[in-house]
Length: 114
Image (cartoon, rainbow, N blue to C red; front, side, top):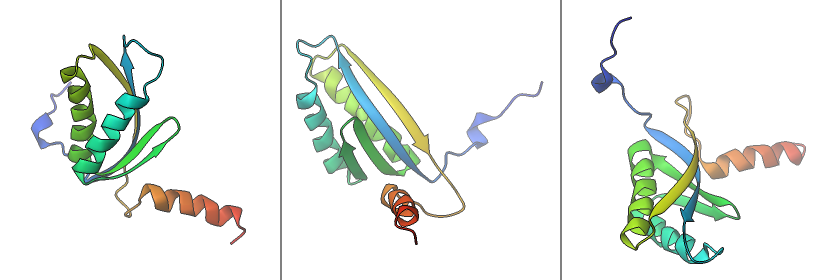
């Protein structure tokens, strides 16, 4: 089997990631204070994002999206959270520019019968 030169493989230029960050080993069942801090971080990042009941959708350049999710981990670790777990679903496409909002609008258009 031939070796792969990973230095030549690029990441996609854009992505849309849905993530659910879970601080573990905390004193309360409520994670709202932690999520509020993550939302503040996302706002400061300048990336497009939208919080929903079970996570957050963030979109933008692949490296920036992954970096801000990593920064969320780092921020909580710096504040004493020993373990942080995150589930992430990431989508990318190269045939057209797509946003989280445009994906929802596409389904809503079908539902409205247009």
